[in-house]
Length: 449
Image 1 (cartoon, rainbow, N blue to C red):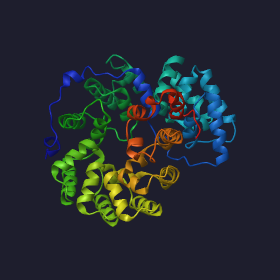
Image 2: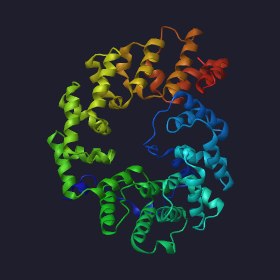
Image 3: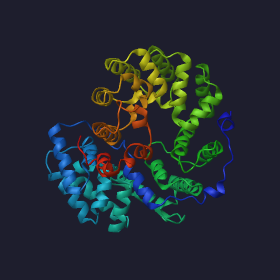
Image 4: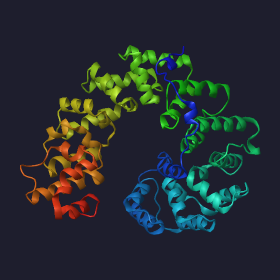
């Protein structure tokens, strides 16, 4: 029954982990970056609205154009009336522009809320909890999702809970001493003592599934996850907590047996679980469907197992997504055998959009004139950012070739794109003397090719 624990147990030094704490700056950065799922109802807007939104965000909040463009893919507006009213309300309640920028980055739809009827009542409700202007601004800027809650008990409890997590001490406020809330704050305190960072505690709070509820079930789940050797300071610890909390021992054993029937060993399953805990969440039908779809792509059983061991997240790709991926690569001129080779080497290829793949292929093969065979050998190039990595580095290579400093055609694609930034600088930039400032400008985005 407890193969969950037996296949991955290692010793855990709990006393050392009690001293683990994450700084406030890390918490701020983590929340500014996280919650990419913040608005499932957003759709891509017309180009004109997007351009206005980008300009507004840059001018009103001082955001970079790139960040503004990212936000504009989640929310847009035709004029500045509504967003102005939201920004003015926040500023009048003590929010600084740096805090507002973090809030908008994490929760863009705030800018299209009605300031008077939606946002203001929430701010007033939080102030009624005893929050000063500075405290309110600090908490909301760290956890903007609080503004999604409805005015009432849900919003108030959420605020109290967030405030409690942020406290330096371990004392529990009086409002949390009754009912379910008592168990939740007790469980959060246990996780804090283990060293779980604040940003991961917040993710547990925000999640619809609450593995921090209850007492006996929480204790049992936590023991299993700790005994398996998951590091409490890492996100995979929380992922494992979710999975084990939601599934009975019998269900877990059944999922393991499904994978064993498809060719995985039990050790393989637990090794993959440690890499990606959600591996055990999929139904037998979904698992079998993914295997069958990969067979239709030309992969034999051994290759399918290899791909999923390397990149288990591929199992969540839909049949349509996988087959579209095949069509995209074939449409670019690759054979099905070449596609199979690329997927074996870099399974992440499943996840990229046709538009992204085409842009990178056009640049690498047609503009830079690397042969398609070079891409087949190093398919990981499709995973690099075109704007941040591929184009800047290739600009340097083109400049060196034009000056006769690189002869005999392009260097190998791996020596240009796969190496680290430091290796690239040492290999192609730092030895060029007077050209170093010009080449560095290309890498930092100050050069237009």
